[in-house]
Length: 92
Image 1 (spheres, one colour):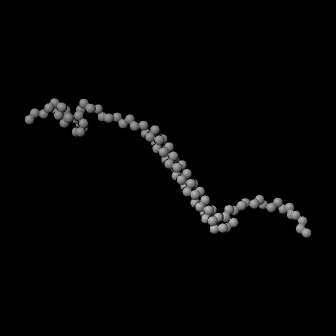
Image 2: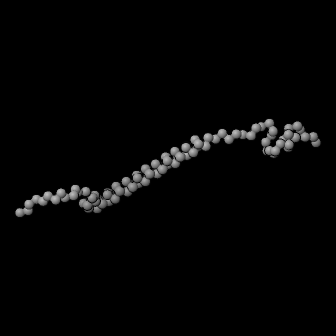
Image 3: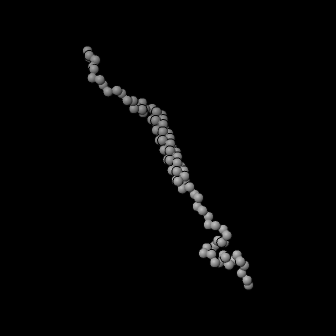
């Protein structure tokens, strides 16, 4: 059995899986752009997670207030009062 010319070159080359006439592929990946894109994606996901947490807490607070009001209580919402200024009205 005679070997073909291409087979001989293929066997003599150092790379057993690649014919001689095909060049080695060049890695042209832009890793800087890839890292930047991944960073933006992480920031975006963190913002979405924070918005979801804020929304769930707001819904929970509204449900707590609604349960309190449905129970007939009047002290459900704490009303901030200004500190007294020290001026007193005369008492008779």
